[in-house]
Image 1 (spheres, protein in one colour):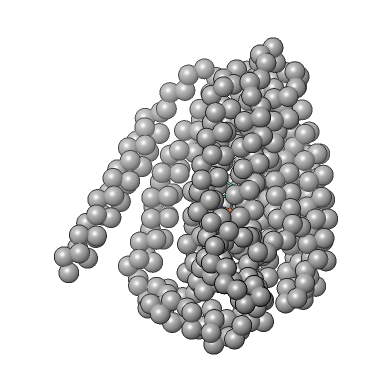
Image 2 (cartoon, rainbow, N blue to C red; image 1 turned 45 degrees about the vertical axis):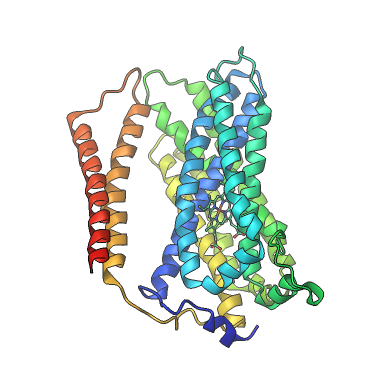
Length: 409
Ligand code: HEM
């Protein structure tokens, strides 16, 4: 497809801020999204594994991981919206074409996600006493079905992203052999190795979480150290085994790249990502062997996050090298219609509202998790809660006020 056609398809309204801002935010929020997806998948995988066992440790872990899986599913969905917005803003001709070509799947995404979500909760409601190995587990099939449906959801996103990368094939998909196919019922392009790579990272990501979790619960007066050490050792196995498997899967992904994408396999981005992933595995191994009771156990999470951000940046570089480098799409030359108000509002909302509310929620979760028996928040934490709530109310009032102001103009 001609570069002029692709560039002409850009939104004539232009961008409200420099494209680089959206590009960076897209990478960062995708890394957050995929980290939550991976922890959700890893946690539900462990829940399934533990649920099918009569072993007390496995059942205890299954019960804890079900809670993690549920929360992470919500986080993955909420944070998934952010890269969705950014990809639409700077790659709109590609994203919308890909969505239209598979419109049924785009709509089906919501239905499949909702059913997967409900099935996870159904399993949770049916198995209130999962930690008790004497209790038989009810309907593990519902959790299995939930995981399968959530994987389908991820696969739809993967196919939409992959279809974007082949504008030269769009006409062939839209009008095979000259006959129009406006049904939108097909997923035209996927790369199983690429998909498997992002899913396989669930294993090391969840392993890192287990190492940090062991450290977190260790300080409780009622801590079961035998259980927690077992959890940490399992975490290290998941980090090392999963890390190596992910690298192998990535190698197959790169070796299988065809057409305009193939050149990327030998780019420095791949080398940097490889070093980041293996560096993370080495760091987690060092922490477990030398520093498992120190604060380093928590550091495996930010170190893993940095590795994921590097992988997310490499994924973006692949898209850039194809769409900009090979098809001539001009992201940086996107018409600008600078809107400082909406940009500032975004960053202030992110920092002040997001920061304030998250600090409160994380403080409560952290302190409650380390308290034996009933948790009573201190006066400072209660104050944090009041401030967080006031910020939300203020934001909502501001939202309607600005809406009315614009409407009245
Ligand atoms: C809960 C199940 C989900 C799973 C397993 C999942 C998995 C994935 C995977 C594997 C990718 C990477 C695809 C690739 O690069 O090949 C991805 C990308 C993405 N996902 Fe999700 N996802 C889920 C839910 C969601 C939801 C609910 C949203 C939106 C609200 C979302 C938005 C996105 C976006 C915007 C991208 C990247 C688009 C791009 O940069 O091209 N995902 N997801």
